[in-house]
Image: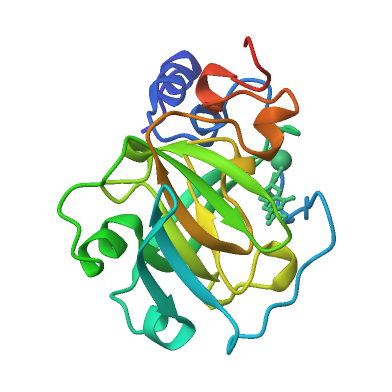
Length: 206
Ligand SMILES: Nc1nc2c(c(=O)[nH]1)N[C@H]1C(S)=C(S)[C@@H](COP(=O)(O)O)O[C@H]1N2
Ligand SMILES: [Mo]
């Protein structure tokens, strides 16, 4: 039954989904869920909440909270990576994928190649459209089976887990399609325009 340690070690290193292989360079694992906000937590009533898709200055579609909650829901189990070096494995989210939003808006094709996400409180972040499609991103309303806490972006935040977590904009209220990539809040302050944790794209020029 027992195998030589060298064989076990070799197998462990090769295991593709081992936790060590899921932590990008320069990151460490945490079990808690740190809160990182550039300003105070906005408190928007669900009655006053809406989510809008825009093509540049033109509105394309808008959902009230009730309408948004009635859209087809998706769950995602994903790892998240904050540029301040913490990563968290196997986080569970529920929300509406961007694919579902486009479909619900009657848009076969996204109208532009880039997006800017706008939030209550004024935070913005830019994400290329292709990083939002094919189930890679959602507007999340639930975390670990419960409504998303206000400090973590409730009632709804963008979730783009394959990019650094600053791209997962909290208190998201609109997704604006734009023709040219433009920096959002942190990107204008020296953070990377794209932010791939596996390529350690923390700051402009990385
Ligand atoms: N609206 C808004 N979204 C935001 C931020 C923010 O300050 N405002 N901070 C970003 C950063 S830097 C990170 S790491 C994550 C933190 O999310 P958390 O507080 O749920 O951990 O939210 C991102 N989304
Ligand atoms: Mo962050």
